[in-house]
Length: 190
Length: 190
Image (cartoon, rainbow over all chains, first blue to last red; front, side):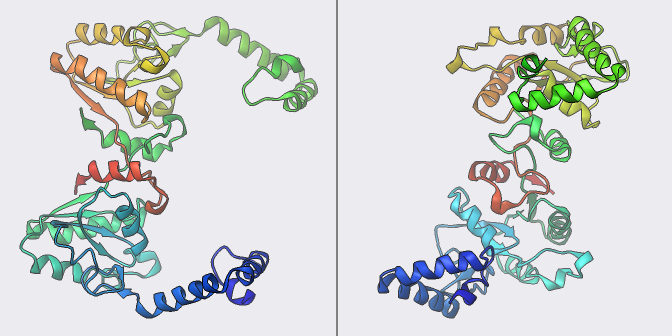
C-alpha cells in the first residue's frame, strides 16, 4: 500500500507511510469506501462525447441540463479548469474541454486537441452565439485562443477571451509589468 | 546607528546589527554617500504641485516633459504606484497621485485625498480626454474609482478603470473565484 500511495503527486515515502498507517486505523467502512470510490471512478468516469468533460453519464450533466444557456460555449484546457469555473457558480453556459493547448514547441498541433468536435458542435447548433476562450494566460493559451478565433469568427460566432489584469484584492505594487500593461491596455470605461 | 536602522520597515534588531556592521566595513565614500543620499532626499524631495508625485523639481519631470501625452491622466494612490507604472515604460500620459483612497470605514472622505486638484487640472486643460483610474483592486480602490467617474464624466471626459482578471503567466486553477468571475465578465472580443 505504501508503494502504491507513493505514486500519487506530492506524496513521498514518508507521507505515503503516514497515509497508509492512517488508512489502517480507519474504520473498515471508510477504508473500503475509499477503495471503492477509486474503483468506481476509474470504471465509470469517461469523457462526455459532446463537450469532452469528465462525466459518469454521457452526455454529461451540464450538456444535458435544459436550464443551461446554449448560446455560450466556454473553452477550457482541462476538466479541472471547467470545474474551477463551475465552482464559481456564475457561469451558466456550456463547456468545451480541449484536453490540451496548441503548443508547436512540443509538437502539439490543432489536430492533437479536442478542437474539431467544437467546430462540429457549433455547426450543428443553431443557437451558438459566443465562444469564450478560457485557456490559461500563457503563450500556448494565447496562441490557442487566436487560432480558435481565426477558425470560428468567419462562421459569424463571436469569440472572446477572458480578461487579463490585476487580480481582485491584489496590489499594483506587486503586479508584474506584463500584467500591468495588459490591465491598462484592457481598461474598461466606467 | 543600530537603533536608527531598526526603525526601517522589515528591519529587526538582528538585521539592524548586521547592516550597521556592514556599513562600518564599507569604504568611507560609500557610507557617507548613503548618509548624504538620505539627507539630500529628505531636503530636496517634495510633491509636484501639479500631479502630487514625488519630485525634486516643481513641476515634476513628467508634468513638464513635452513628449508626454497630455490627453490621458492616470490616477494612482501613491507615488510608488506611479513609479510601478512608469517602470513598465508603456504608459506615456500624465499622472495624478491621490495620496490615499476614499475609505469611509477609516473616516477618509473625498476631501481628505488629493482629488480637488485633479478637477482643477482637468478644468484648466483643454486637451484632457481620458482619466484612467489605477487605484488598487480592492473595495476602497473600486469605490474611489466609482466616485471619480461620477465626478468627472459629466464634464465629457472619459473615465476608465484598469482591467481585472487573470494575471499573465498565471493558472486558472489557482485563480480565486472573484477574479475569475471578473475575468469572464470583462472578457474581450478577439
